[in-house]
Image 1: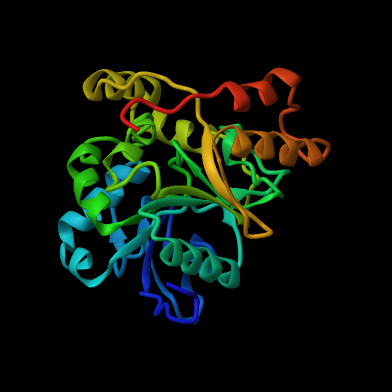
Image 2 (image 1 turned 45 degrees about the vertical axis):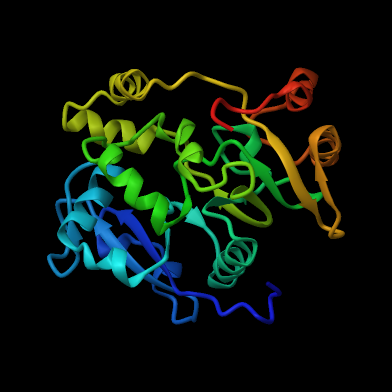
Length: 280
């Protein structure tokens, strides 16, 4: 399917925020290609919008429990954190590329100066997209088929830490339909975990214990995150060792722009030696 032939299906964006007033402005932009909803967790929440005083994924599951018709009305869903910095135009480009390539689980890459948790998610300047064995919890786009499988798994989990080590195995074709979109980069600059951890502590919820139980419950074994294939900006598709070499060389060109955690040579070597995840 070419981009000219693609009739982009509207994507439902659901963003968890303290209140509707504090939701990011791009959520409500008047553009085609997506519609936005806010799910609130703050005590000053507006009753006109969904309210659930828990973690991100607990709240999202509650939303779909209360409004199951949303699953019938949309084919794709995007669940970004409320501190993602982007524009409506970049969101549209991200959605269009994911639908054009048939990805069932994907995320935009992060800008080089973002606060990140996983090196694989930092945008690689040589790629349009990379096929990976990992998409993180921060801002995943997923097809309805995947979301329906995940809702029972997520139901009682506030942060769902650890589920993103598993969900790539639930898509129809894990080696072909899981991707990080490098040609669309978004910013994340809030320090990791400080806001979420403090909020959960107020409710006497230990997120590290929740993560431990999730790994045990789902039988998750840690593995090296990797890109096994991709499409370069010049349109050439690469895979295997060729893909890994391009990943390393692309990252090396922006090494001085990655400001949050300096990379050492062992981190570049890890991209070359990384194998595929269990189940792929």
